[in-house]
Image (tube, rainbow, N blue to C red; front, side, top):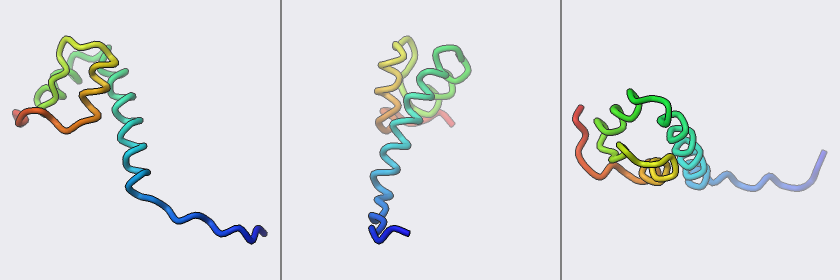
Length: 69
């Protein structure tokens, strides 16, 4: 057994990392899914007509407008 203590978890940093990964995954998935683009637009994310990199950047931030339900 190791006597080295386990460092304390940082849920805030873990959440940030997960959000980054989800934004990247969603942007890749949206490239081939018009339905997903529509869903993001309905949620208030302005992603239509953007490159994968631009979609990823948009998804890393809160929506810019009110969702359509």
